[in-house]
Image (cartoon, rainbow, N blue to C red; front, side):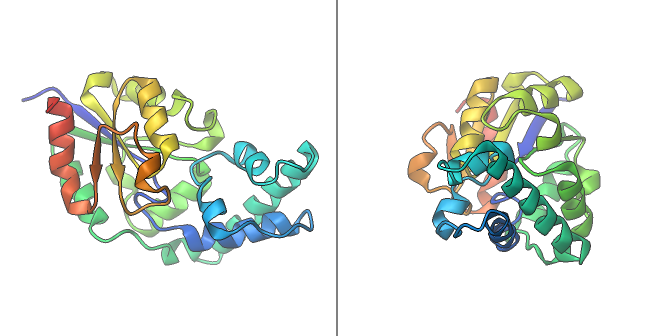
Length: 224
């Protein structure tokens, strides 16, 4: 038996295409301070950050108390949609379920998540798609500094007892890749998410389709 390996997934933009709910909740956030919502590309550019970091980036001219009102408005809007069954309407990217199930079936592989979502939002999404049992470690914004701080990844390594050189982070944003580098683990950037490829230069590898992920994980962890 080979040494165990840890495969850590981002969620929004990597496992699920959550942009519909994110954009709707962001409209609630800006409505809370009576401000216009930034363009779609601007909003998606901060996906992955915790709300306390995202709001100042989106509205730098507003006061801290306004940023708090925006974050509260976002959470309320997102929670309302999840409670109404919205989690089941958030689509998974084509083929990602099969990749997760394939990896989870490997006795030498452990799966984890590192996401800017809240624990409640993450559990709702995973349960809606029947994926929760595949992950042994769930790292969320409730318990850590925002990406790209490495706290989420370092905690996942500690919880699983797996060394950094046997771990890989899979994500779609520069925040994911910078977080992986800060934690001393390899990063694989996916091409179907919210940040353009030109912003993902810190990645050890890039994939364009979910079917490429298993081979990319093998190559990166083998150092080839």
